[in-house]
Length: 270
Image: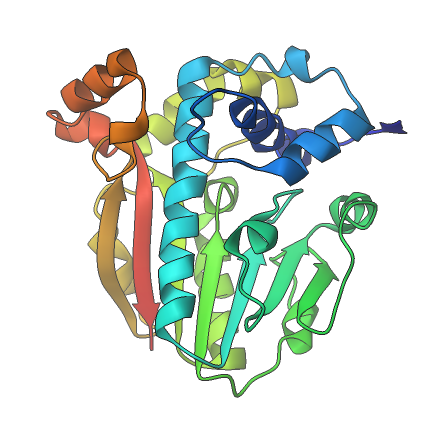
């Protein structure tokens, strides 16, 4: 068993990992992640100490499934693709996507990638990059010249400051040119209140950023075009939830503040 020691926002990578493993064991799971089950079984860590509420776990799995769906569609509709999964943690999205034609890059802190190397092996089209996304050097490892790029930032940007996000998006554009970006975001109210969520309190992570109007990013320059806002409370996957949870989601979807509390945002940067 490997003893895991991570601090603050890095420890938050264990929350979705355990959540996906727990979901995968259900009779009717939102998604099946065999790799998450495998990793959790091999890590010496008190996952129950994270105190993940069931509603939070449902949201995380829905988030992962919706991003998976979007990425699968993107890759199937384009060729000569490259995917950058920023703040990848121990997530197995590359395995779940199952597309051997994409050039895939998982990026995270060195200590996270060091752990990841116990469970994932690099190949000609799967790559691990050990770096904070706010550093600049890691981008030199991303090849320019691909026809299509997709950038995935799941559970990441809320931990960065606004100026860091602006710099990151600009640096990526300067390196690879145009790309599609998908990430999840809190509204500003939720960003302030989420620190009281049990799992966040346990890790001591700090939320820095939230956004109310998704079109706000278009004023940042760098050719940012808003494409779509996807709500966890209203999507094709909700029908697969249990009846009580479906009802709760339908009610939440009636209120703008509730459905925009946490959602997916998709942009095109040209």
